[in-house]
Length: 108
Figure 1: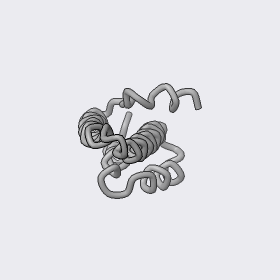
Figure 2: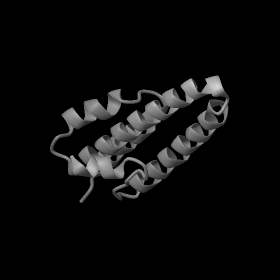
Figure 3: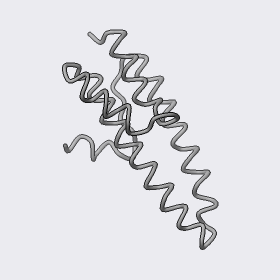
Figure 4: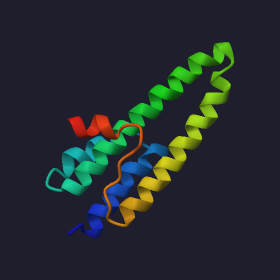
């Protein structure tokens, strides 16, 4: 059974994309080692935050050839929507897998 506390911590992992990306998922991975639910969501969130950072960085470089100006808003919109979906599923007590990083997270 997933506790309300675990749901809150897991939601914070995903929502941290907007205020403390990387930091909060890592802290919660270390602090909540006894909660598989929080561990799962912290790993998913961390991997997705890393993917988002790399995608925006590559897009920023691509602004030199103008395509980056199109990619940055698309990546930002995708990250926002995926994070909102993760928060909704997590509040419902479900495990959420980000579409672009799920395979990486589950191999490790």
